[in-house]
Amino acid sequence: MLNDDDLNRYARQVIIPNFDEEGQEKLLKTKCLIVGAGGLGCPVALYASAAGFGYIEIFDQDIIEVSNLNRQIAHKNNHLGNNKAENLVEECLKINPNISIISRNKVFDEKIDISGFDIIFDCSDNPETKYILNYLSHKFKKILISGSAVQMEGQLAIWKSGMNADYPCYECIFPRTNQRAPITNCREAGIIGPITGLIGNMQVNEAIKEIAIKNYQSTAGNLFLYDGFAQTLDKIKLIKNYQCPICSDLAM
Ligand SMILES: [Zn+2]
Image (cartoon, rainbow, N blue to C red; front, side):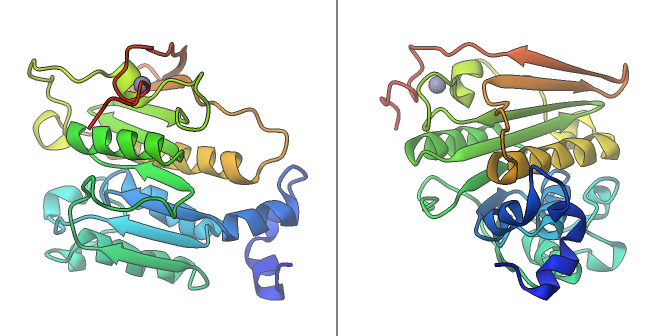
């Protein structure tokens, strides 16, 4: 049962028929891991907190630099030099002090136990972290919601390969390669702030649907490509790779 404070706070959500109080109770019981407190991690954490995801843990070891501020929207000029995860937690608590949210000032690696989480938000900007999150999410049967953004383009996908063998995983679609990957990080290739804002918000929207919306059909197994220059959103059906080392449980 929601208390009066929660009923007021989440009033505009619980009146939606497919969500209602039951959906809010589910969100409040949901444990979210957010890896990265930058351009994607900021909107993901702010909106996940506002929506009432009951427990959130944020990993990031970086400190806030002035060149982050065009997109990492929780970080302000007077926060320069602070740890990103710690600052993001403070900003989330200003929106919603009723949830549990903690920061981890450290790099995310494969030794970190994700078994207690329900939703994993990949808000990282490097391929190695994405492969680790994919491996762990598959192994522990978690919902992985990954975003990425560069210049004026963004990507979004929901990965549930550990929960349903018909779904592909991240590595099915983006196999590891020895060739040098194209430059896709913001530092070298650049990024327009609203692109990360949009993709981060879409990540939280998918999480709300996965946890709290009744009669909802998952968008797992699709890749969404947003082109902010042409203003288009493409939905691409993904095909599982049955030779994938993660899906055939041979990896690591
Ligand atoms: Zn796979």
